[in-house]
Length: 152
Image (cartoon, rainbow, N blue to C red; front, side, top):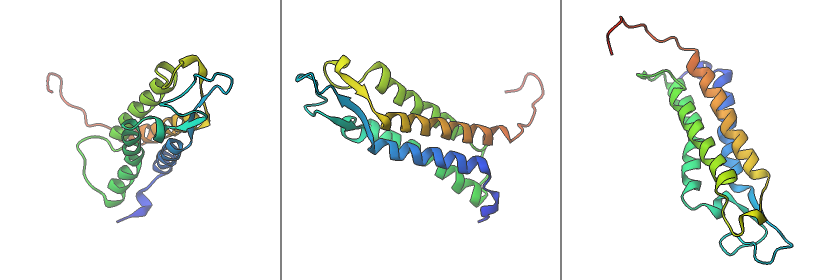
């Protein structure tokens, strides 16, 4: 195990994963206090991702673990068939897409116009973005071997 292999990009990706994990437990949605019919699964006030999304919470926690797994692979010196950081960048894009969709396009609760976004949603989206940039920069550091034309 060689911790000196961990670069600034892995630290940045781990920071993003940590922000994403923390953001899951912070308030994502708030109901309009002036509207007595506004609720998210029967709850009023502020609701976190953990409370509002029973399946998404586990997917996002798994995504938040990706940069830590990448760092473990780098520290242990495991050989991969793809550039290190590439899969973590793909996971970060998927997590960011899920967060964006559930915050902008399909907010939980009724009526949708009475549900507002809170700071936890922004923290989670920022975490996914930071995780993406850290891992994408790490993946771009590795030069791919060139293949002759006509080969797969």
